[in-house]
Each structure stands twice: as structure tokens, then as C-alpha cells.
Length: 116
Image 1 (cartoon, rainbow, N blue to C red):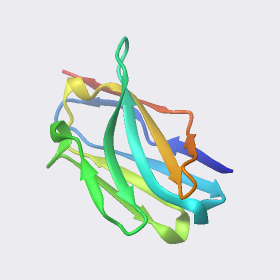
Image 2: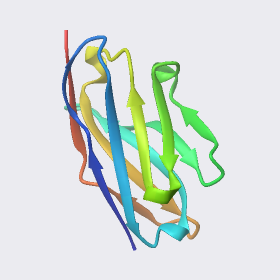
Image 3: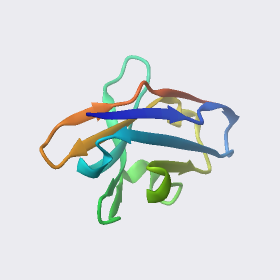
Image 4: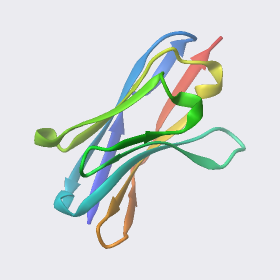
């Protein structure tokens, strides 16, 4: 079992920055990937960024150059640094962990609101 707790969301003006955190606990040794997803009202949940156990990262095109995913292994925490935020980045952001056995775990989500 893996538990995930997100934090760092809030209200920010367009062009501003936020840093989200995803703290993992439990069987963290089994985690293969940590992903950040987001879900805007009335829309599906979409993948935003991924970091692998090896440290490889991937981003959806709409956030490339603005968002950075990173991790602190000592703290079992993954971060999503979000710069140059736009109103269309407004969503609930979820942390997701995928284990080596293919199991998936979700955090409770954190709201990000970008005002124009």
C-alpha cells in the first residue's frame, strides 16, 4: 500500500508560480512512477507530468517549459514547480503512484486556481 498526500495548491494570478508537493508513505520502495494529473471542472483527468524511478521526466506539451517535476528521495516527496501559470491551468491536481506490480494509488487532490 502507498499513501499520497498533496499540498501547495492555492489562488495565484496569471504569470505567477506555485509549487505542489506529493508526500508518499507506506511501500514507497515499490513505486515505479509518480505522475501529476489535473482535472478541470467538467473535464476528464489528464496527465501533466511524470517522473520515473530512474529520474526520467515527461510532460504534456501544454506545460513544457513552464512546469518542472522533481523529487527528494530522502523525503519521499515529489514536487511540481509551476511557473508562468495561465487561467487554463486551473484544476484540481492529483498525485498518482504506479508500482512495479502495476497497482495505482491516488492522493486526495489539491486545488489550483489561476486568476486572469
